[in-house]
Length: 253
Image (cartoon, rainbow, N blue to C red; front, side, top):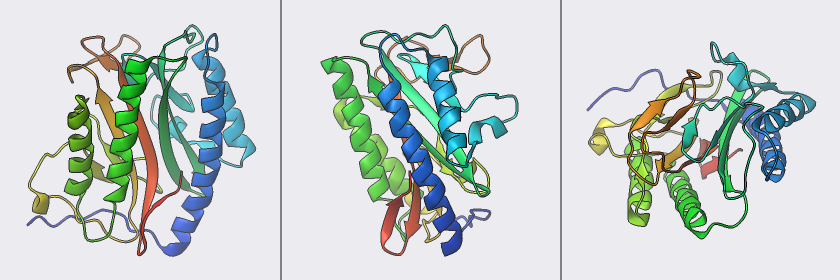
């Protein structure tokens, strides 16, 4: 069995600080979700995100990523992650929009994301519902004594049952004093259960469901950041920051 070192364990006080930061980030997330509508630009969502983060005493996590200058990543339809929030990206009816954002509060990062459809598109709504269910099942497995394998399996099984695929080149992760910490959390089974890290009280995990309607192959766009599906079919992501407590998983975003 592997010996997993370097996975940060947070104290009760550190988790309390992250809870407060997560609460503030959750407030920002819900404001942004209400602003995503037809005719609005990705840049307007970016401006609102930074305004609301600063208003709550936080700073944007994503601006700590070398070379990245924005508070959000915003993707549309086939865009899956790391999309630059551009002024010329104007949301249209039936667009599937994904927004990823993070906040630093008192030295600790929290990270969350959501996807939604502008208007009513039953096919896309069905697609999104599968992602929500996968995230819920994954979070339920973030319990002391279980393993990262259990989270990965929950995501993969839920998505495949609905007819969709997890992306195999993008992962969830630990989060805390750094935006990206150990362990990596794939949305698919990649090893024997006993060869994945044991989940322990004090871990804080950014659990992500990153998935596609079509093939899982991805491409990097010309802007050097945006990653999209190679076949042009839609993708989505849902993410929450989750603390592992003696009572079970605690969603803090």
